[in-house]
Amino acid sequence: IEELFHEYKSKQKPVVGVVVEPIQSEGGDYHGSPNFFQRLQKLTNQNGAALLVDEVQTGLGATGKFWAHEYFNLPTSPDIVTFSKKFQTGGYFAKAKFQPKQAYRIFNTWMGEPAKMLVLDAILKTVKEENLIENTRKTGDLFLNGLKNVSKQYPQLILNTRGLGTFCAFDMPNASVRDKFINQMRNAGIQIGACGDVSVRFRPALIFTEKHANIVLNKMVEVAKNF
Image 1 (tube, rainbow, N blue to C red):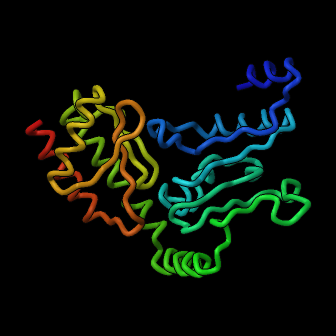
Image 2: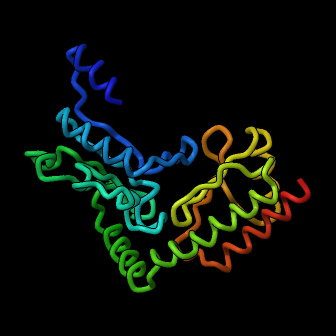
């Protein structure tokens, strides 16, 4: 990344911002270390570029924290954070220096719709009152440990288990094996998704509990046993 900053600067095209996901979701659920993100923030600051963290998939508790970037222990908050999906609306928050000088310079029909704001308010209250982020953290610990145990049972099939909260994933030997496994899990009553070249990902709701995690793990063993 540092080389790219130098490359564009030498072309008289300075980088104005870096957009990054806390977990590269569609690309295969790849995780960066806290050290990586700390160094990335330092690099953007040194080059006068904004650091935009895309929390569209990771935001609102899926990783066991409200924002996934909380895991990185950044010296200061990101310059801009985007969010959507579970928030029921598309939006962002930013440091004061990045706010447009004129109203409505960043605006579209999906942002700030009053009815969606009421829904979001109810969601946030429910998440807090029912302690759903803590539930996700505890359930995620059990679920990830369970995935690792399944991987130990079937090491040639379930590879590279990883996750934060219930935002979990693993790899399979190739895309055809991965797609066949997903189809067989669906036939067994479990809906899971694909991402990247060979990855399988889980995106359960915040009300996903240890009971549900054990159901998924048991079905995985059944499918893997007869695969």
